[in-house]
Figure 1 (cartoon, one colour):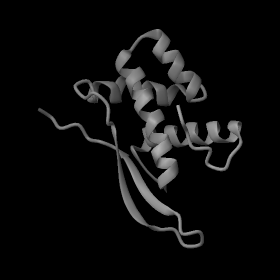
Figure 2: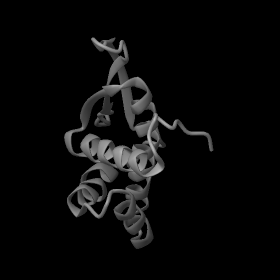
Figure 3: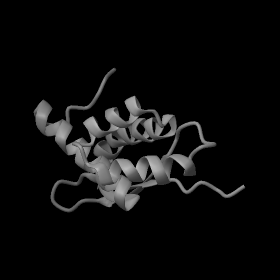
Figure 4: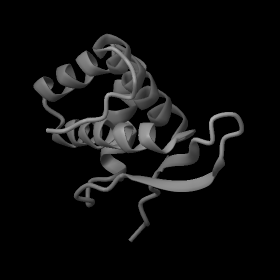
Length: 118
């Protein structure tokens, strides 16, 4: 699987992506650069899929990626997984904003999609 290096070492990149994933799950909306958002989307979708699975193995995989943050994992398994029970992926939305002053990086808002009550 191809991935973006984001100009970071492996440990720094993994930590940054885990922190962005946790922030997105807790706040349900964050502002970041487009490349980071596209990379974080993969991990958020995977973590929510673990939550939908609901097994002990899935919970441990989510804990391992999210740096043993039990509060975030509890939210994924108790709140987000039931919300997206009828949805097969595509849990996030990326909305483009303006370029950032200084380095002209495209800024975006990445947010969790609200599931329609049917």
